[in-house]
Image (cartoon, rainbow, N blue to C red; front, top):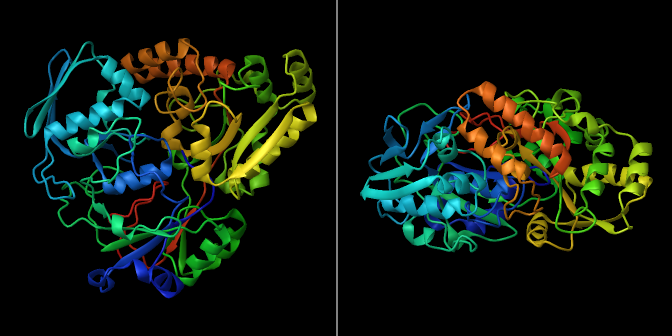
Length: 523
């Protein structure tokens, strides 16, 4: 889940070099190639199995690796896996690992590690739970091979194992995978293209990753998250720079190399700077903004109160208030599954029309007793601006609203509790929201996930979706799920848009994606 501010890559020159000098070990001070990047927020949680936060996913994709990965076309390709096959009835699957895979501590990656990792990940991930519920056996047969036996066919098996959505199904050593799923791993040892340098981590300031010299890239060309991951820089510094304008100025001065989210009000200046390039992508690389409602706490434990909210969210007004230029936004989108994607639909959306008079009447009839709507906001973010637009409409129809601006780590901690909050605004990658199986607030229906929305029709429809053999079948089921979602109101969409990233023009090979990826990049 994406958060708040903007940010991306940074070069170790000028002020940034001075700020990070104390973080660089002597042998790396002479590194020929180094980058400094500013991401959406600080990385505070280092366990990709336990949280949906996209900043943890970004960290996980660099330090860990996955059995399969998605390419730009949305196809799932082998990543750590060399080969796989299945029985004619699609119930027994055998997976063989690539040669040369090693953990960052030097020990070999084994099939036993992968089995333990899948079992741990599945305890927290809705799709993982669904897969394991239909699994009869998951066992290592030798050091490089493991077998998965299903109780019934699961057509989307590879899509689940290679999903780019958090919580990520990353592999970790069995000793780490033995950590209970409700606890975080202590030292993130992966097998990915970068290594985490724990001794150089300065929370609130910077985190340092270095090229993993033992990493063996695939031979295929890089393709989104699939294919080769050739690391061409020696050191990657993740700077903490919460102020967007400061970050954008640092990018123009060459003090940082990449900023993940640029402030919209500075785009005209950045577009004229020849030392900077902008990356603004459409389709699945756009973002979807959502207000997540807490169904476990008043007043949104009352479905009638939740349904009033559909008449208060004005997507066009929200994106205008944020300052999103026309070329970086979609028109009001009624689809939970993103507009412009294969499953896009307007099913059930007739209730989502801005109408303050009707909302006021419905709120009065809903049984609402003036309980404060406590909104957890990420201070200084575009999601906070989105919240302000909604809050005005809420107050106009009779809601009592209490806004609580916090930093993102605090919001993450607060939302884990069932009481004391009513909603929070966020925005998320299209790759997370374009399917019922990955949309955070729908896929987690009737699961232990912040917001605690539940309608028993949804889990059954999700199972049917995984068993559907054709896109047409999946489209129909996705529409049926959306009808229930509009009734249940797990979240409210506040807009679909692109946030351009910015990077220094001397960088070469940067993968064009809304996901920050720093393999293949060179200078």
